[in-house]
Length: 182
Image (cartoon, rainbow, N blue to C red; front, side, top):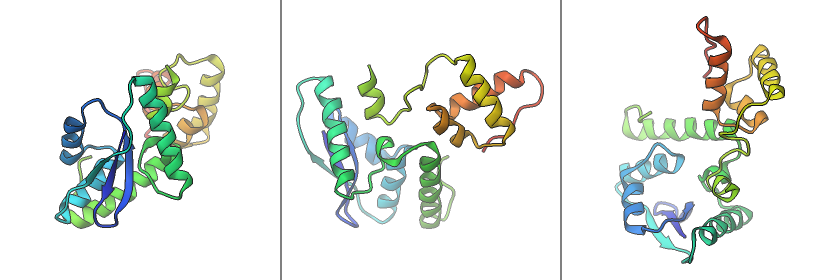
């Protein structure tokens, strides 16, 4: 278990687990398209690197996933604003957070930025992500589409990923017109 700390504020902004901390640290420093990666890019543009602190060592993957959930929940309960998917809320909130972080990054860089259940919870994935669609879900999706809800709002309501929503809507529309979801 480890935490990433923003040296500009000394605040923890990400908690994760890995079996290879050196590799994972390098991946974070390189910057990803995840919310935490956008903060890392901001930190680097300011001339710093994020700090990595070991929180706990675990003996198994199950223990690591449980510890990750514990540390994220503990940090959030203490008022820390983490960028883990589990801590940021649903797809609508993550989408808004990503937009805000990208805007800040663009302003800093002067250019556009690159665009079992324990594992799912620890990684902030919705409950029904990747599962087969039921007829009832398809009916709800159709109604949400008629109401012009965003893919992110539909994803939150159906406990799925926004990409799954877009794919299912694409299947429903067939070869004809496709909805433009943002």
